[in-house]
Image (cartoon, rainbow, N blue to C red):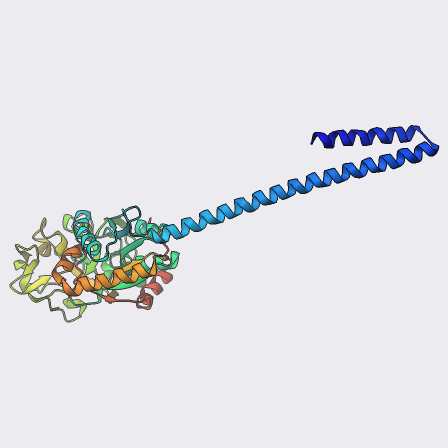
Length: 394
């Protein structure tokens, strides 16, 4: 740069001399001046070219480095899924006791780790909406055990994919139930207008979505809504008298062999009148009425602490069938790992039904069956009709 500066000064000095002189001297000076200007211009051009080349090379190098870093991060993130440093997140919705869910989840964790060699980490987020947000925020490494409404919303929001659907008491579907105090005069949904409603969570399909649709269709406006946090808590609110009615899941009653003893008529969904007084939990925690009638709906979840729950809480009505809850995967979960986990999960259910039932006891899963997105079109339609989104889940 110093050479360039002196050349430029000489060029200016030559111009000054040319302005002061004339004749042959002018011609000589002009010629010298032209040569100086040419030399200066060539020097400037050369230096500019070098500078531009250096900048271009630096930019290219930085771009290459950035692309390399991005590629390494992307590939490394995908290849890293299921390792101790990047365990697969297994998320459960808080529809039952968190302790019960975690206990079963750890059994599932150990079984899948032994079968696949992958590392899993079980968690119960604070709400259904939180599960959806975590699955979308961690698109490469998350499995969610989520009900129909949460699945539909997660699929719409970020492309979460369903793979399996629960079998519960022999059914691939379940129902929503409305429960009221047994001594209440309430006889139909219309009697619920202006009363206090306890529901599990805004993202609960049977606890909120379906009941909301039924109440809206009937033109019923409740007086107050109470988010209880779980199905058993919604029933507990009715049992305690802090809510006039509650909504939760309904699974049909069964006999000692696990066969359904319900004829599908909503009027017969509850325990027969002649068995009500005999209902109580047995040594295994099952809620039995008489010798061969097992209650499997959400009331059974509080039978240990409220053994007279059937005597105090009755079923008002039940909904149409709802697809059972799902085992779904975050949108960019590695396909090979997904196939491996699904295969091992199906094997677990088939070869060790008792262990499987223990692992999913909080949700009463007996087994699983394959599922596709179209299975949830009816729920998707209700979600659209009510104008719901994951923002409504808190």
